[in-house]
Image (cartoon, rainbow, N blue to C red):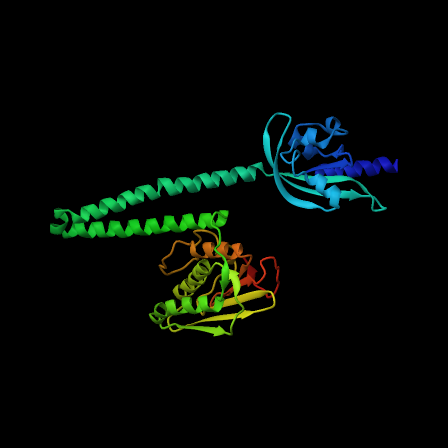
Length: 363
């Protein structure tokens, strides 16, 4: 009786897990098959038990690079392996698989465990997203180029030379078209960054030198608001980064700091390093960010609530976050209304590192 209860409890647990779980013996014959595996493959538990896994799962990895074979040969687990299965109805389903070898109490190999997640919906969304980006690139950029060309031609017409109001209208139209074109261009670059379509051009870079260039470029913009923009910190160990894209990250953060800071305030940039990271902080004396807004400031097109009309498309920080993530780093934000904000960019010296230090909201 206890054995039956235990087996029933074991079955209940397996069937409650929202992913397919399949176990096989050392001959790759299926020994257990939960309800999600039934839904995924179209085969019942009764049909699957005792049959070779490749007959039921029919994965694109079965004929080559079988993860079960690797797990059995070297007694190691593998995770997040993407492939495709064909179910009994002929439907192709994208999956993500994790596999591990199963050992008994004497540490002897007795079979395999495979956890399978259906990611077909995720893959479909990725395709739709890619198609949408392509549509934006073609169906919005092309008309904008045409509009820009027509405006330029109209400006050369004789009627414009005699009509002040028409010249003013064309000027406004041209400026509006340029803003829209800039927004589309920024959006497309952000989309490529998010989807990993843009490859970083890595090289050994002195990050302090990049900071000096960005700070010098923004001095005039800061002086127009009587803001003191200062750079502190010592020399930094060169690391492998994409200098141009890192320049953009720093530019976006400083641009926002100046825009949202009051006149006659101060923005301080500090750079330091630990054994694992290069850490750059940007501290301003601006109005700060509400706690409920911080989780969304790196979302595309998100704009912080403001009484002022501050320009921008809401893509700068989103792109910055994507670039830093591609470098294996992260951006930490600490802010409080009325007391300013600190944006901290943390870049690993070793891309495989996983340094942890400090607090704040991690994006």
